[in-house]
Image (cartoon, rainbow, N blue to C red; front, side):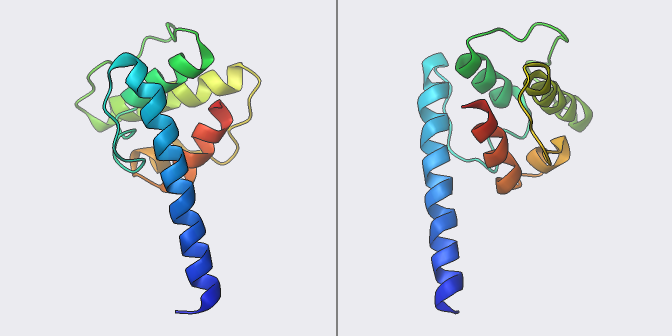
Length: 116
């Protein structure tokens, strides 16, 4: 492994750790346990809680699913979060709900970065 790829990997791990800590701190305000950027936003529920806390505003319309069991409802939750950012004049460029649902770190970090 080259020195550049090691440095890049180290930087990515540091970024993941930083954003995981931010998410833990924010979600703990509602008593929500958070462990992983890859897994804990997949249903969109924690993503919407995170957004409500950070923006200090409830997301009421459209109504989101508090316990989505089906993939389509989970994707819908994530889409609601992305639309909320767009409607509040933020620009979540290149963030697709399927990326977050699939646990893609880069998309998840980009979303969090837009929120804070």
